[in-house]
Each structure stands twice: as structure tokens, then as C-alpha cells.
Length: 70
Image 1 (cartoon, rainbow, N blue to C red):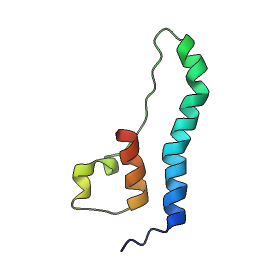
Image 2 (cartoon, one colour):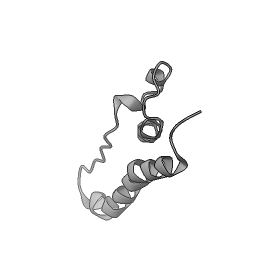
Image 3 (cartoon, rainbow, N blue to C red):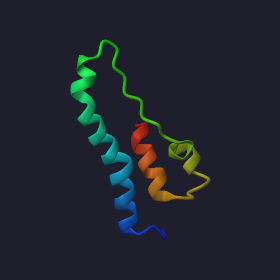
Image 4 (tube, one colour):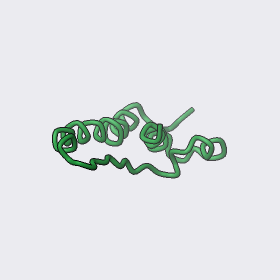
């Protein structure tokens, strides 16, 4: 059983996944006008699925970073 509360999971996903989506959407009009626009999302080694086999140290964080990687 995970010690992560639903509230912690929700807050982490809203920050790291939904927040990234909202910021990207806000910048899209500018990005579309740029000649070489790029979006770079920063994830973490903690978001690598292969590393989760041996260590689940922060489930909410790891799930949210995996979502950015996919």
C-alpha cells in the first residue's frame, strides 16, 4: 500500500503534467509565429520506467515525470 495520499497525487499531477500543458498552450500563439520554435520539457531520471522496478521512492513525482517523458 502506498503512503501517497490522493491529494498529494492530484497536486503533483496538476503541477507537473497539467501545468506543463497549460503553459505550452499559453505560448502556442508565439511559438507558431517563430521560425524555429521548440518546446523542451524537463523530466527526471525518476520518471524512467526501467528504474521504477527496483525503487519507488516518490510515486506521485515519478508518475508525473513519466507522463512528461511519454
